[in-house]
Amino acid sequence: MRVDVLRGAQMMPSTRAEIARFRHRVFVQKLGWCVPASPVTARATAGEESDEYDHDDTVYVTLRGDGDAIVGCARLLPATRHFLLGDHFRHLVDDMPAAVIFEYPKLRHLDEALSLDHEATFPDAVWELSRFALEAADVWTPRSKVALEQSAQGARELLRAAIFTARALGAHRLVGVTYVSLARLFVRLGVPTHKLGVAYRIDGRWVAAYRIDIDAVALAALGLMRDTGADVLTDAAADASTEIPAGADTLPAVPSGAHQRHITRRIAL
View 1 (cartoon, rainbow, N blue to C red):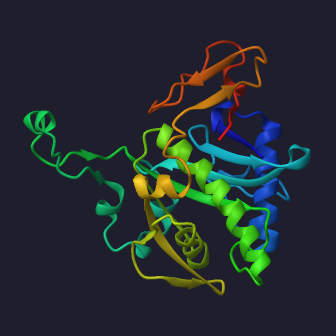
View 2 (cartoon, rainbow, N blue to C red):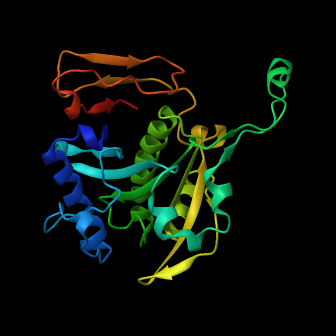
């Protein structure tokens, strides 16, 4: 299974439409979402799903399976600007400032303590995970043991790719609103998923706001403790490749040139 990481500004129109069609199939056709039309979603055509948070700065993570078809996708946005949870679901969060401002615990090493003797805050270290979509129809409401196992495997692969990407972008925490059943699945995968407020019933399903701290527990559960590097290829230049060194905290800079807007990062997890 292949993982692609793309920024909105770098996506070709065909890829953007492919993601929008996949999301429409999962969220509208399978889950029955009613996505209202608005001026900011005017570029979405019939059979596609997008909103005002699909823009040039958005980071997309996609899973591709047999035949190179998308079988999963997720969206990442920094929680420092407009994002879905902050703009439309604040009522699901008891304490929004605490949710979106990450604090390191007090440092214990002597050399660190000498330079920083108080808790450090990193307001840019929190990202929103949204539009978490999988081909498996039963990922939100598994009806059998086999369906549960298949859903768990797909959810693990997509969550693993999303957390790997978010960490590479500097995130220490993910927040978002999702179905309670999906959050419970994350917990079964060994990833601590903390509720940020009360759950609400929307369109017959329970939803709530959650946070996932990208810490040793979450990374170990997803097998990412040692996978701090990845091979990165570009669609624009088949002969160009960049390797993220082990321990790297950021993705490599996007190459400059005429093809800069159409770079796809392929990560071998």
